[in-house]
Amino acid sequence: MRKLLDDVMRTQGKWLRIYVAKEVIDDPYEKNVTLTNMNSIPVRAIVEDLTTTQAQWKMPGIKIAKIKDILVDYKHRALLERSSKIEYQGEMYEGWREQGKMQLREQPGVGGNGYLRLYIYSKVV
Image (cartoon, rainbow, N blue to C red; front, side):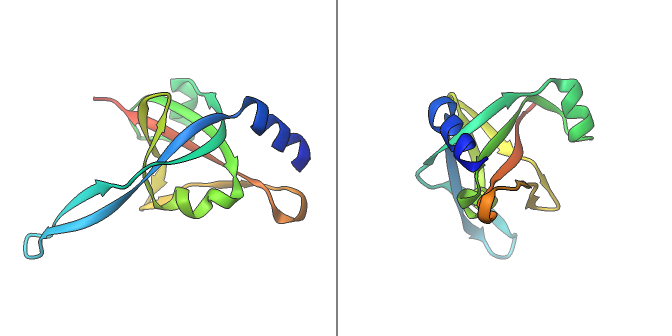
């Protein structure tokens, strides 16, 4: 199973750019924080579009403009959990978080080496 998904990822996978942000405290008394994005890290993923109706069921209460369901290699878990923005085809997305924690689902693989599935979305402006 893992070999098949590896082949699909290599041939049909799209590139995502993952941005990790660094917090800079501007004013410790007012607790003002500025986020500065670091250089992006490219990651190959399988990307699927979801409809707004699917988004309402999967992510209740979040107003979105676009939503994607992505599948990435498990080795990128720490990077995804620390990400602030995810770029796909020139558009910026956010990972779906609840109580500050990225919502990742593990897809089992052979020998514990699987894939992660998560939702990324862009907000309504």
